[in-house]
Image 1 (cartoon, helix red, strand yellow):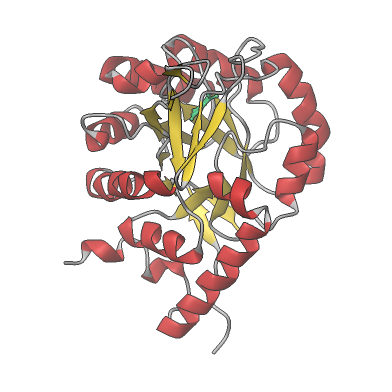
Image 2 (tube, helix red, strand yellow):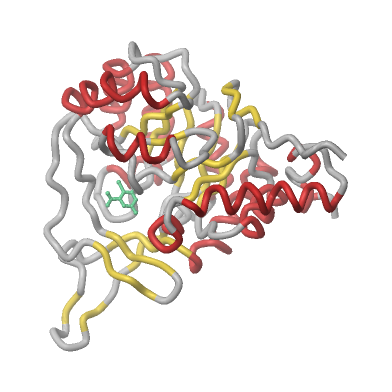
Length: 305
Ligand code: RRO
């Protein structure tokens, strides 16, 4: 039997395989983007970029918890203009579809950011409306009106694919996915991190300087998987799974829940960039063992009950 084909199409963008990095892990400098590009990914995502530079929160910004991390980075980024120069330099060397993640503190800022980046030869955009600990950014995805306005504004600013990264902290993930789809999104990323915190027992106070943070890694997986499953039943646009993917088994579960592509974040910190090639070879062997020619046979399989 010929080797299974791992190519997928995400919102009209052809990916040589379904693996992406999760926004926020690497993807902020030309150097880190180049390292990702060499690691075998099908597409790349940048750290979230806003209109103005931000230093982010003071330390400590990341703490390890069983199976994962709680981060409170606080949207550190060089600002849109500086990042544009970084991308102009690095894009010719990347040779992979790149999605720029953008955030805003108001719905209007999304349209503005996308408009200013649209002339770059990027594959598309990922709208981060779901940071769980930065007031404003998370609230946009939590309000149907604000979400609609942010997606519509971005839609009016580009003809390129728009992914919308939603929060697992919503009362109804499916409803938010529907709002994003109706407003013109081409895909849903499920999900961002879970709002959480850690207490410093000695100091008797919150450990993170930002108090609240986002939980990622293994504890996030069942939550994000549930969001993918719900979104698959709610919308027609493709879903990208993200949350606690460490192995090909995790990836296969996400495809069965309905994802067409997946993003890996925290596992890079634990397993290095080799995690991508490990997942790919595991997936390929799994498809072969099941007699499947491509991933199409897995996507949404868990819905056939
Ligand atoms: O920068 C952050 O603190 C951060 C962001 Br923008 C996000 O979307 N999710 C997260 O866990 N951390």
